[in-house]
Length: 349
Image (cartoon, rainbow, N blue to C red):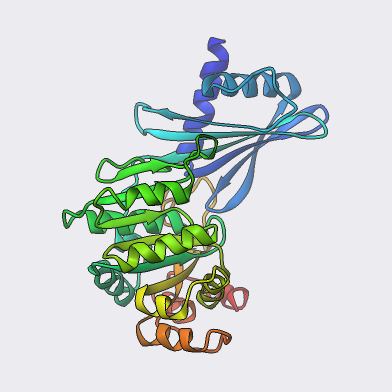
């Protein structure tokens, strides 16, 4: 068991050093392939025999409080570790496959310093975000695909607001980064603690700012609007392909255009794009590059706000309205600054 414990710690430490966000155990018939997701891409890191991989998976399940004997049903668990050099929250997920059990581990380092200067290189956009976060009430919605950095942007916004002695309550599923500057609560559907229930309770907790991890249904959307109308700044995310798609989805939740016009401050759609590395001489870095390992990808934003947002709300069936800030303009600015490479121009489109 001691050997297995050492192997598991070595595995996690290596993933943290390489800035990996996920570890995947991919089972084959006689062996298991180990993958790390680094800067959004999967990298094959090694191969283990069947016996060693099953022993290691059983060890992780034991450490996280899962049922070791249960291999036919998915299981989820999390563990917070105060490691010697980097505290980290580990989220474990098992899945039965045709061959054997598969394990995925999400690594959530707790040391990250989230600042506006880290999420965008565009000084005009950073200034807009600073101005936006001085608002005392209203609704800010972030959209984008999974892994596009929405959570990092939310934590950045909350950190910026917390400097002004505001009371911030966050409702998350689950809590990804622990921060004692906020009142953080976690969704637990089995215990009846849904987004709707927690949001109702938080409104009686005297918050200045509410962070809702995600708007998933009509009830949550209605309560978010109510919170914004009653003097709170509400930060949240939503699944949509664009700011215009987010407007249509809000209308599908039976929100009135009048309420949206009164509460919406900003809808942002973001994506992460590879940064050009002058040392690797290509876009993005290998998993072993130590120069730009924390800056391998850059967030670009499509943003609707101000008069452009009001125009889009007035004709919500169209995608042809101008944006307040566009990814395309940020792309060309980044290209001029040497942050992106010419070879990616056509890939970006």
